[in-house]
Image (cartoon, rainbow, N blue to C red; front, side, top):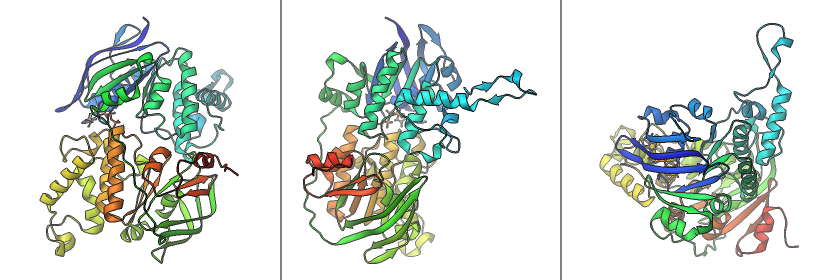
Length: 521
Ligand SMILES: Nc1ncnc2c1ncn2[C@@H]1O[C@H](COP(=O)(O)OP(=O)(O)OP(=O)(O)O)[C@@H](O)[C@H]1O
């Protein structure tokens, strides 16, 4: 059997945490090999080792052997990995926003105009050829966009395609590692990417594919390896795929899906957007109106790039919003974030880099700091305000409870957030939002990058927050099946406007049609 990559007895410790324990893994030429596992099960650590990531070396390296084309290799840096033909797209995107798409794709592989034709020693970048190459690579991954556009002006879903195109442009690429490449893509874009990955694999490139979406894994992968607590629990061949069994292997117990009994009948609006205008980059939204009802869970959905995030982002100043916004009969100034938060509205954006996590601080500090900072919570002597010392006993109890309730995988609440897996960092953010206890909570893609067990825990927490505290929750997300389970109403955005609002029959064919701007009539 022709293995392009083989891994034997790979282990990795982060101090006392055993992130990987004797992993054996192989990858055939032209194979798409899926890796699945709960948050914190070691998937990213595994691929970070293969890609020579800096933080692996800085934390003592790894044990075990890695073979490329049957030759043992020592991967100590990203450079070593790239020399072996390994390319990787991380969970957190790494592009240069101020540069155009083609410069990002051709980075370190720029075409140079023949020096002999030039005076002097310096070489000139051949922009035309770069753009042609970039266009070719983009088409290979399934998108047709102008490579001259600056990366900062394209939405996250397109950035994901640009990053993959950057790796695919490398004609020495043997192994392509994709860590949750579809988490910011909608159903259509995911289909496009998956079918193009299949075509790329057919050209002989081998792919390691990490995802929390089982249906994608079984669609695109020839083989799947399941990680649990840093170990390989099982390997599935395509003919043996069974999603229920795979889920059970991954989590170690059955997952029960939560859902809401819809009963919100209030007519009272808590927050209204009246003919507002929103803009960012090249996008412009005009005359947008939406009433949000007190105590409801409102889902806002749409294909990526159609504006599901504009209300939360506009109100909190991440996008420019102008116009009339009324909160409990009072006029709000969009972008005046501090006073809006003080009034009881909070936003947890869908992009991780916007979360405002204090990466070098502990889990407990991240959970309580905003409530302490903005609301003087967790003080030993509340009457003294900020002069009071913190009530560490209460903080410890509260943070431990939150860690348990949200199933956050941590050594203890003193662990630095930067040391947590991506999914567990996300859960810390949700813990922070719950701690602030807002009256209105905007939350973007709350289950992105979250394993299928923890997804239910998060949705259940949101349901409880809504039921017990009557918090109005606005979830903007592309995960329609989840919205259907937990929302009172669902707004479908299409081409920069509110296309339709559904308040009863979520099963209707109309909801799917609305996503592409169509209706039954
Ligand atoms: N730099 C680090 N220092 C300490 N512990 C770390 C560090 N990086 C990762 N870990 C720990 O290693 C374990 C595996 O994390 P890893 O990121 O590989 O999980 P994952 O399966 O990719 O999770 P997710 O699905 O959430 O992305 C976790 O317990 C995590 O807290």
